[in-house]
Length: 347
Image (spheres, helix red, strand yellow):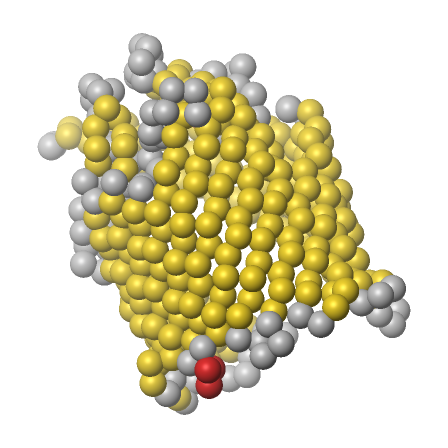
């Protein structure tokens, strides 16, 4: 709109219909249909401020409705509006600071104010970056957690939103001659009123844990192995438990890792392959609700892109390449091999 200013307005919509069915050999048991309709209006503007500052401010409005013929016939609607502002400051060579605030107002759960601050320092030779951040968070329960009903399960309309605060600190090492980046990050998050599934009662339900904590270490590497060939790898060690009694939180894997290779073949063609692995996850048996340790699993994928023109790109990917049978949640098998394609046209 003016020199030193940029602005954008985004309007979006989603209409999703998901149908699942149950059957035993030769007998059709029934279907469940879930329809989710969502609309979003988002606007923000950024301007250059005094003293090497950049200020961003804006608002978001969202409306969502869900109908679920299973789980008790959910038919609910929720809207919220939010306003936010952030200031980025570059006070000295190699030093970067940011601070932001956000206000959310839900018609179902009331309002909340959250914030975040970050700091980073880059060495004069730009080979090492030290960074840290801290902030607060707010997360509203889902309709299924609130109102769902099924055999052995009932939602809890009295759930409170999750509120959290946390921080992280890390280091990035930029290898010479643009050969890649090595990163390490320590993180911790403390959550009040964490929403969990309580299977100690029948029917099972959802509940708020008084306090929960999660902390761990993330390692990441992006390495240029050869011309146009890149390796990406990551590993996360996570300890997540109920802060009141020290029990492990469900479905938070202690170990997760991934690795992949990507290559630019020239002529607009690029592609890669990767694997993601998970191990050390506590869960409950889907039939008995007894505590169990889920087996680890690894899943492979391949993907590719063809930039046919400066405006047209065609993409394809295969998820669960080896059609592996595994359960990310006990009793809920993951999808088998899936093939996806897309086209993007830039105006």
